[in-house]
Length: 355
Ligand SMILES: [Zn+2]
Image (tube, rainbow, N blue to C red; front, side, top):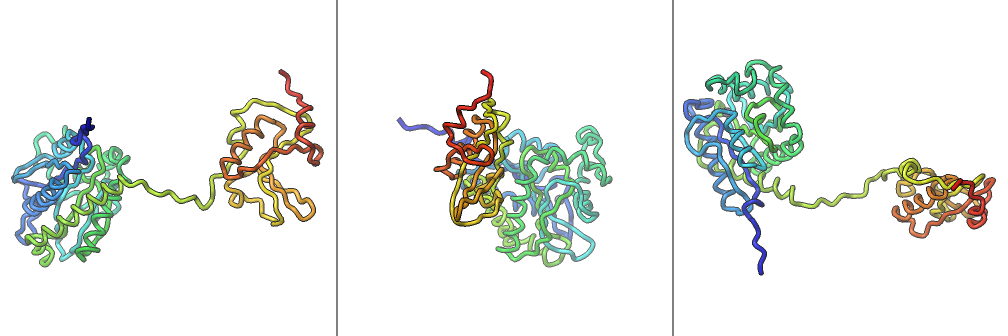
């Protein structure tokens, strides 16, 4: 009997969003149409991902039609997408150029706000936008604050994808990257998954506009986005090697003292001997695999190192287990009375706990 896997549910679902469409052309820098360039890039990204059976692709639009911003998020959410990638092109009065990838956040500056404002302004073309966007005002920088919370839990992952995309643009295509940025894009606010908005470049820049309007430019940009999405998925699948922390987590008596019953011995102090040797080692948790509550006694030329310090025999047994777990596999409990080591059996005769 072979196991039939439900491969469909295991696929990594990517929601692709071509900005604008229909009556909303997006920016018309140099006479190019943002809505058309965004759609061509999206279709190229989608076609490549669909050939890879690890992926399933959903589109907010595959044709030249107007889709409201909140509807775009709804499509991605309904498909339970693992990722949302919105594709746009930028514009500016100047000959500014370069790529930018945004994640949702507070506008760090006016420049970022202005990009988001342009992309958000489409909601003014929508019917009933006040109700659909909960009173959001695309012209107010403050209005975004309430929007950012929903995406917060996906911020780290969104930033990872955004940085993969920008790195591909610069390293592979030698495009100028203006960086990974945060701003209040309404379309990113609507989704329940890591989400980025890519500005492929400026149509208003003569050279960049021409490149982005060309088949080669669109294929190049699509390839970089495809590879970034694949890298992102792979990074989620990898089991990362976690190196030992340089400063180990400090273990103290207090960590476990609340969990053990008292078994007290009058005038006795128990410690766990963890090491002995001729080296005089500084009593720092870093030097003892993170163990704290350290003490040291010099016997002639030999230093003995101890962990823990308690009259509670149950606690010291627990601390011995901790020391073993930290690598001191041959450690043992010793008893002190008046700062002298006494045989453990003798110490245990002085139990003063009431039973
Ligand atoms: Zn746009």
